[in-house]
Image (tube, rainbow, N blue to C red; front, side, top):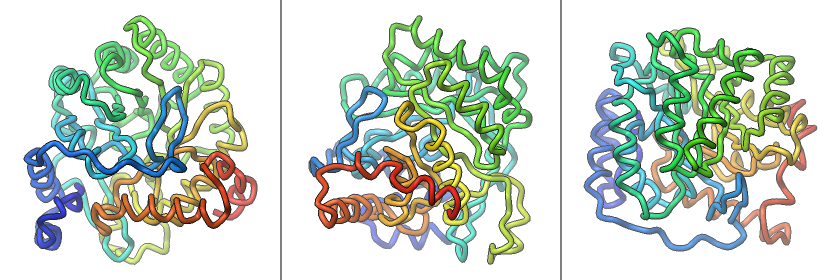
Length: 362
C-alpha cells in the first residue's frame, strides 16, 4: 500500500510508483527495502525519549501495522528513524484476504481506503522471521488477529500470542479492523474481557515480558469506550492504540467517487475523529495506561496535537504515501523544536494537557 518508503537514493522512484496501482507499488517498495544494507540512524535527541509499557523508546514516532504485514523489513524500517515498528497483522493460518483491487489512494484528501481483509502469510512464516532477528535491537511489535473462517477466534489470538510474544517488544490485539466480518463484535464487553484474559495468560505462560496492547476503532460510541477502558484496566493491559481506520465517510471528502469504495479510511480525514477519541480515552484512563495516537499524523503539528490529547507515542502510515520517508525526521525535528520553545526537556509534561478541550473540539 505504501509506495512512499523508497530509499532516499532513488528520488524519482516514488512518482513513478504512484503511476502503478497502490498494492503493486507497495510490493515493489517492500522488495526495495529488503535489499537495503543494515543501517542504524543517528541517535535521537534525549528529549524525544519516551518511557511506556516498561520500555524505553528512542523517539515517539512509530510505524503503524499494515505496512510490513509479514515482518520482512522491520530492521530496514527502523533504519529510517522510526522509534518503533509494528508488523502484521498476523493470523494463525495463511489467508489471501479480499480480492484485488483492495486499496485506493485519495490524493486530494491525503487519504487511503483499504479492504485488505487481514491478508497474511500465517503465523509460522512471520514467527520464523521474528525469531531470525533476535539480538538485532530496536523495538518491534506485532499486530495479531483472527482468521476470517475461524471457528474459534479467541483461540486464534491465543495461538498468535503464545508463538510471537517471546520475539517482540509488544503485542497489539486487533479487534477493530473493519475488513474482517464480525471482528469488531469482539469489542463487546463480555467477549473482550474473555479475550484479554486469555491473551494475558498466554503471554505469561510463554515467559515473555512483551506488553499487551489493545487497538480500538474510531467509530465506537462513548458508552462502548467506557466499557472497553474499564475492561482494559481490569485485565491489566499495558497500553491502548487509538485508533484503527474508520468506516465513516466524511461529507468533506473531495474524491467522491473513490470514497464510495468499501473498507477502512485512513489518513488526514481520520485525524479529527481519532484525536477526539484519543482525548476521550485519556480522560478515562489518565496515566494508568499509556496511549498510542494513530490517525492522520502527517506533520509535527499533528503529532504534537496527539500528544496533547493524551498520546505518549504516535504512529503513522498513510501520510508516507504523500510525504515520503523524510516525514519521520521532519516530525522529530518539529517536536524537538516545540520542546525547546517551551523550555521542556521531555514530552511527559505535554501528554494529555489539552485532552479536555480536544475531546470537545477535535
